[in-house]
Image 1: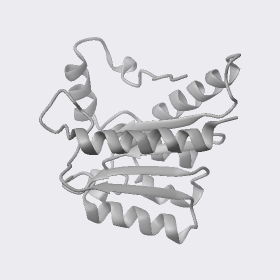
Image 2: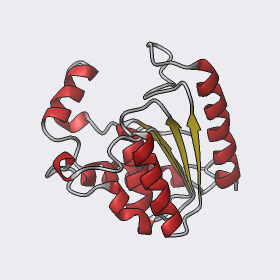
Image 3: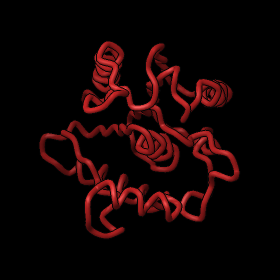
Length: 186
């Protein structure tokens, strides 16, 4: 089962690109709002009769940031996948009233296994930022696996554009499915 909360619904109606731009220009979706949506989705999934009782979270780009943040701040998630989550490692100038803390600062609270999928040609997160995150995970003894792909940048799963890298996308999707099988089976 999969559930995708509409974290933009509170910002108005319109074309998805227009609403996303509006949200970015206002400092981003507030972290507390995203976390509330994720926690509500987790609780709902557990009520379904065919639920295994285990819930994972996955996101790409800002959703990767949200995925990492959720696993650090919501109790009860069983597995998380961060696909090239930008601004997990954030500079002070990148923070806003809506997103006041860099997710990396919550690493000690990470409460489930984490899978990271990254392109080595990405600029958000850069390979150096991925290294910083990995060092924090090691520092706190967290269970994680990172896969980094040469010849891939940001959004290399996005088959509708120039960023798409089919070989790296298929390999990393397989790793995601294996990871969720391992941690979400009843």
